[in-house]
Image 1 (tube, rainbow, N blue to C red):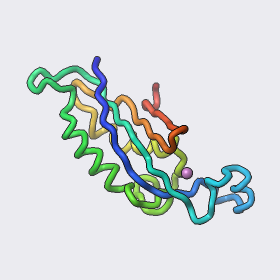
Image 2 (image 1 turned 60 degrees about the horizontal axis):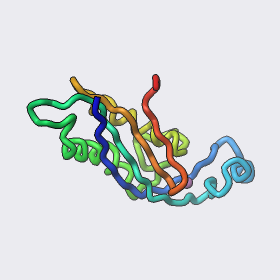
Image 3 (image 1 turned 135 degrees about the vertical axis):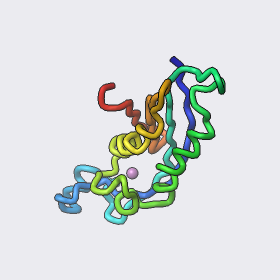
Image 4 (image 1 turned 60 degrees about the vertical axis):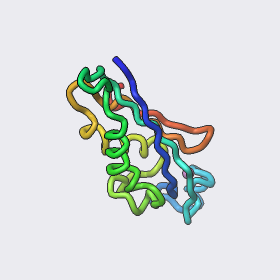
Length: 139
Ligand code: NI
């Protein structure tokens, strides 16, 4: 089994909060992440695909194909957007790094999986110190 990874970047804003709570309660629970008018991050994302080498092309997956797919399905939808309001696949989802990683996985899994290869992980880095890696429901 081989693992290939492509790195992506996007900039987005969000507000991490529970709409059922008051601003004061959200401040207690989520700190400055609950700022009512939001705040931004420069996110980094690693998409890793696991598979066998396709003998015809010598790759697990053409990384240009992966780049175009992830740009279309994810980057173009989230870059310079508000994750609470602007992103179809994040509607109703609290945009913590965990939930962002899971939502991106769900956007990509069926489009990447093919005979001989599968989506292995989605890693989202929100700050230099904080990142989340998701490997699917059963991992
Ligand atoms: Ni944040």
